[in-house]
Image (cartoon, rainbow, N blue to C red; front, side, top):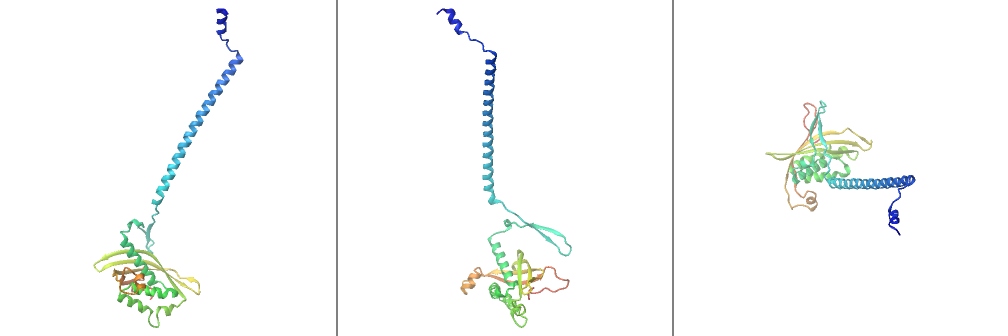
Length: 251
C-alpha cells in the first residue's frame, strides 16, 4: 500500500448535517441527565440535613420536657370594692424546705378535720383533732359536741360541711410558730340535695412539735411527729362591722 493511501485513510470525513444534529442532541441529553443527577444529589443532601435537624430538635424537646412547668399566678380580689391585686406566683421553688411542707401539711389536715362535718366520718375527724391539739384547745373543741346543742345532735346525718383549703401561710414570732389558713366551707343539705353558697374563713393557729414514743400505736401512726395545735381562732373573712369573732364557724 502506498503512502498516499495511508494518508487518505487517516483523513476524517466531517459529519453530515444530520449526523451533527444527532450528535448535538445526544450531548444535550447527556448534559441534562448530568444536571438532573446533580440536582437530585443536592435535594437529598438538603433533605438529609433537614431530617438531622428535626431529630436534634426532637431530642432537645424530649430532654427539656421534664423541666417544663406551669406557674400559676395568684390574684386577690377585695370583695367590698372589687379591686384586684397581684399577690405573686405560686411556685414550688418558693418552698423554703421540707420542714415548711410538713408544717403546711399538718395545718391543712387539722383544719379539714376540725371544720368539716360528715356524720359517717365524725368519729375519725374527732379523734384526729384531739390527737393534734394540746389540752386547752382539745377541751374547747370537745365542748362543740357536748350538751343539748351538740354539733352532731344539731346536724345529725342531714347536713354535710366540706372544707376547701385556699392558702396556708406560715410565720413565727415570740409566741412560737403560727399558721394562717384561708378556707372555704360549703354546706350541703343531704335530703334536699342542695348546696348553700360557700362561706370564707381565716383560721389562725399556733403549733409546735412534741414527738414521743409513749401512747397507743394507732395514735403514733396518725401523728408520728407529735404535731400539736396550741391556739386556735377562726374569723369570717368578711365580717359585719362590730360582729364578734367566733371560736369556730361551725359551732
